[in-house]
Amino acid sequence: MIEENLIPKIGVITDVRRDTPDVKTFRVVGTDGKKLFKHMPGQCAMVSVPGVGECMFSITSSPTNEEYMEFSIKKCGCVTEVIHSLEVGQQITVRGPYGKNFRVEEDFKGQDLLFIAGGIGLAPLRSVINYVRHYRSNYGKVVIVYGARSKDDLVDIEEIQNEWMNEPNTEVYLTIDRPQEGWDGHVGFVPAYVKELGLNPNMTAVLCGPPIMIKFTLAGLLEIGFDKSRVFTTLELRMKCGIGKCGRCNVGDKFVCKDGPVFRMTELDELPDEY
Amino acid sequence: MLKIAKERLNELYAKINETMGLFMPIKKAGEVNYHVWGEGKEVSLETLKTVKSPKNMFFPQTENMMKFKTEGKNIEIVDVREKLAAAAEDKPFVMFGVKACDYKAIEVLDKVFLAEPVDTYYQIRRNAATIVTLACSKPEESCFCSVFGIDATAPQGDVTTWLDENYLYWQANTEKGENLTKLVETLFEKGGEAEVETQKANTQAILEKLPFANLDLSRFKPENLNELFDDTRWEEMSEACLGCGTCTFVCPTCQCFDIRDFKTNEGVIRYRCWDSCMYSDFTLMAHGNSHTTQMQRFRQRFMHKLVYYPSQNDGLYSCVGCGRCVNKCPQRLNIVKVIKTLGGNKND
Image (cartoon, rainbow over all chains, first blue to last red; front, side, top):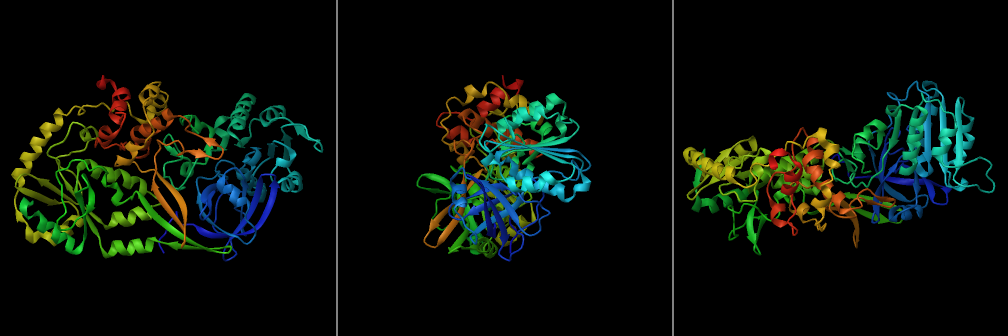
């Protein structure tokens, strides 16, 4: 057997959960019923339906889950459309893990943590949030701000309401873009909400969501006094190989697939603005 | 140093071909490219620039990576590399007549494909190859390898050769080169040092007079990355670009590829093929595109060659000055113009 990153492993879908009208979460194990490979929060994997194509997704389950991996996938292109049609028992291919993870030991340990997500941007954060919950005593206060277009577009709402909201020393703030019947929570965009919350700027922050949300939320955090070198985000660009060779996700002297997807905001300042 | 009379070169090729594959510049349908040698083939060692660079010896324009057989909900993966590896082990091959620029380009590609995690498809072919380079004696106007510190009069490689009117001169540089020499040395006689020195001096005199010999690269440094990226002159430099991708296909160092699947009667084949950062769908995603204009794509290509790649690889540029893009661009755009515009004061 020749070692190779480009040859995938076979995964079996063991559960499909519909999170929102266009997001489904797929639970995947190997053909032996065990987890396919180890990963760290923020890392990604190439998932493919042979004959259709291969795409990079963040692994949304926590590394501390030793039984299976989960991918929360939004239907928005030709591969994700087919993935959404797959049922339990279907085999797919998976290769990875790829990319640099959130440095949960070096950068986050002992810190108060602020997680800000928009829409499907929760997928990579869910991995790190659940990791932090697993090693709860290693981390300080946890604040989670999560926004979506509507209440129906909040991904993993059951886990958020049943588990995250009941976690000690943890605050969860949800918001939706427009008022909606049956929603008595906050209404408004994430960047504005973040400024209203009176957050402690000494926290280490992680942002994930649409580029426009990240841009305005970061500006808001800096206004409140957050330290840019302690704000992290993830980038997403077209990828084919995942190992820094096919050339697609090149920005400046970095490849998002292998030097990212996790970046410190001060690192992004040094890159050309083309992502 | 060894030498062999020019009229006996066919014997040399035949001897190599007895036990190894032999690829060399051969004329076919009016174009000289690297092809398998055989009796009666029209070898053209003198051709300075094959139309396609020899990169396809290691990184073919298209190659199958794996097969998938699907049955119901199940998938079986067929790894094709074991066959590839077995074939390479059975029959290692010689690339004969590689010019200095193209040899340097292989070094540039090695740093991409052999960096961890290694690309085994490339590695299998690379390990099977013994590269015999050929010094240039008649560089052309579009050549500018010397700008990148490449010595066309004495290329590197497993074996270096020089060709004049009477003889081919041969010098092994590596273990692979020594092994190849053992295989063919009965055909050779000793000598040639003086002739080679004469040729080097003559070629050097031509190289110094080439129009692009003094291009100034001094501004292409990692610390100028953002300043170069933001330069307003990219707009006018790229205005005529058609986005045809010819420059990337003839370039010996362009390595971007696509991975795609196609369905056949015997299952799905996943293959990879050369791709081009000059194409609009290169960076297209379901949710948007990071390169929406041709200017951005044009800038990406040259920034990668002159700034991004060198910042990742200890200052090594990923242009080798072969001049193929200078000759082939239908709009006469090329890296020389970019270097002259952005490279440094000495270009003025």
